[in-house]
Length: 169
Image 1 (spheres, rainbow, N blue to C red):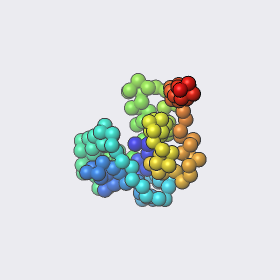
Image 2: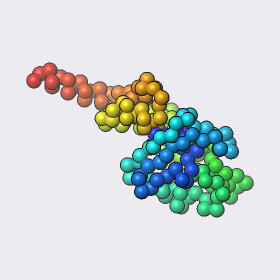
Image 3: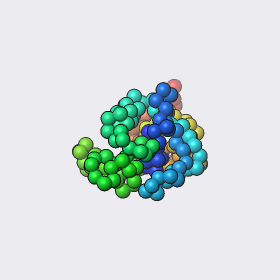
Image 4: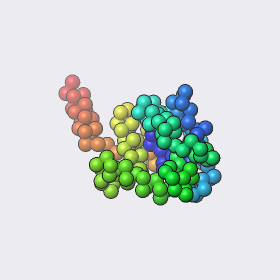
């Protein structure tokens, strides 16, 4: 999805538009743990990857506590005293580390923000225009987007081969 952690943790159930396969990112300051969204502007993020929408839908249907009074999507589960509270930064980082280790990816450089960079780079290398990517990521400036669009070695090699082919013809 390429969301910032603050955007993810501030999602409300009403922000998920299943029929349109998208989520709405809204500026919110109502999170009880002080989690904030970075941008004050609202944007739509399409979820055209079937796995992303399915994972979100499965979480809401099967894992999110049904008796929660909060409209936040991501909540503390289990049976502890914080059950049904909106997930905060610290709990999210702890959960991410645990899931990363479970997946056999016990590498400290793999962070939620690194996944945001990977998402942006893959879309850019797949041909997404920088202006469209800027809008998807919620960046105010194109320069901020360019920080996310690093060319992989494979991408550079493919571009090099294309350029050589063009020069030879």
